[in-house]
Length: 134
Figure 1 (cartoon, one colour):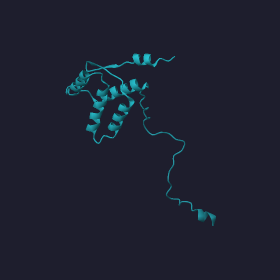
Figure 2 (cartoon, helix red, strand yellow):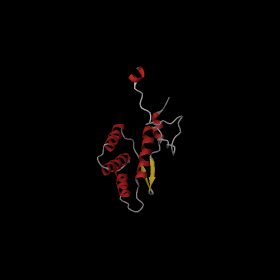
Figure 3 (cartoon, one colour):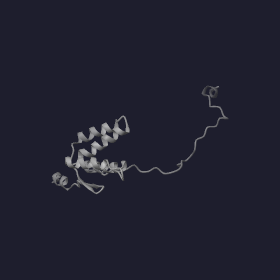
Figure 4 (cartoon, helix red, strand yellow):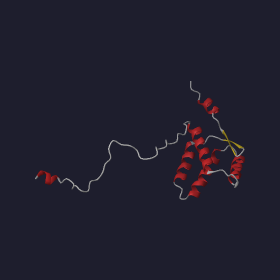
């Protein structure tokens, strides 16, 4: 029998940033989806950033941890960066969906190769079907 309770108990629910350890909790998928939608439809970058902060804090286990997060976000010297926040959010997604985050494969640099190149020859007129029939 597959014991999902045992699987849930084994999940890694801690992360560390700037020397501070945080413990996460499960969040209902609807709550996560609502914040995802709000962030995607944010009118400004600042609004999106506030929603991203909200999304991180909703996973933190205690009010004390949420306050600690707010304090770390205020640090000016070596602050938590957008890349840090993205990494944390990707990790949350992996833990809470059970699927690893797989970034898009980078595209190859430079022009691609193809069997043939198409060019337009302005010196020849386009074929007229009626003229060809005459």
